[in-house]
Length: 602
Image 1 (cartoon, helix red, strand yellow):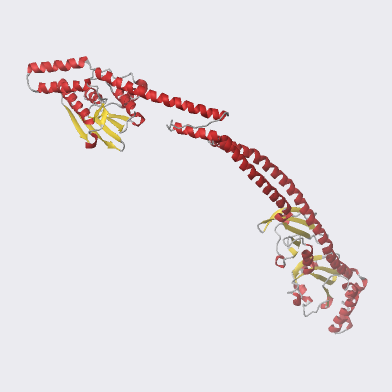
Image 2 (tube, rainbow, N blue to C red):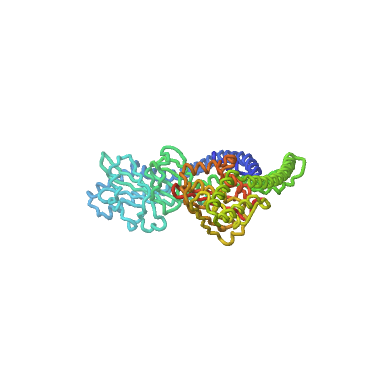
């Protein structure tokens, strides 16, 4: 949240206003859309469940008719006295010494005659009665299927274990009628064991074509994508519009309530389906309806799509008007912001040019007037600084230390008295040259080679005065010799090296100069005693900062100009592009470097 707030603050006023307005419009619209969609979804979902339940109720009535026909025929065979007499007589036919084919024909005639009245009225397609002494009755040709093969089926043992009044719901299985395997590949069957005093005297297997049920599914299905099926308690599909699904496992059996109607939403074949189930009265079987969830809420999608399109159109129109008005209202602010950034970059000549009587327009006009005053003040300050800088140089050049001149002149005088040689004349000439350079005030800047000449004369005088050898090594690029530099900016550095660095001993001072990019690089390095890290840090903190301008070294020097004065003077001349660095190691000497831009400040 904090990061979002910071990013929001970094945006312009125009952007923040647009975002705020959009949020105030989008959020209420979105909340309204979500709430209405939620309630609409529930309503349509309930309607779809009710529609599926109504379909399953109709299917229940029709399928129950088929199952009731099966049960009626089974009960008729089981409880009809005449049928029972015929079936029980099969136990005594072998005592009559009749041929088996005659017995079988006689049995078939008697059973057919007795069943004729109900087989013409009810649905069962195939009836099989297995009797004692290997006699059997079928309403289909035995060349299609030998009924004795039923004894070898795995499920047949379950029939033997049934009580006399129990029915075994075999369910769906491949057809045993050879000629129907392509046309009607599956049958739905029930079976019974007919017993008397605990002794079985006959078995019945009654079947109908599974197609009779699947045709009902195709008839009552509301659309091509609705899936209707009949499953048993184990989740095995007994009937389905798609023949390939029969006898497969229905994997969502756990989502179905076994005892009453129920519904749920499941992922079926990577799609969401609405599953509605209804238990049948018979055999613990259930009817199941699967409808694609998107189809279920199709009306909601249509409504939502229409609403969304309408909201999008209105939002687009509103957004266009909003952006136009925001740009119009905030244009002066954007212009003022741009001018402010340009002023921050240093462009104080730019103006907003905003005119008008509004609050923002008056602010822009005041800002322009403020810039006019600032520009005028800067020009005045620059003019005053130039005059101040020249006056300061003249003052510094005039501050020749009398004590220093006295010492030098006294030394020359004694030297002349004692030796009277020509070396004295050279010393006097160096002194004369040095004095002339200090007294001359015509120009604040001199070529670099003249500044180096001043250093040479100064070092000669210092060698004479201190009586130890000082060597100046110069490595100057030819293209920097005529480059103008501030007068007397090197002399204080050389003086500092001789007095503080060599400490009454001789030494070597290297002066190097060249151009590095747009800056002239000058390095002054001595091999004196150097400084400790603490002393160097103290020097950098107290002599190279503006707040310590008045803390210049109190030493006897030619001009009285110390390192701090040199730094502040060059900083004033060259501005922020000027750099001066001091590095030093104890017993290894000190190095001072200058980066002086070619174009100095006005």
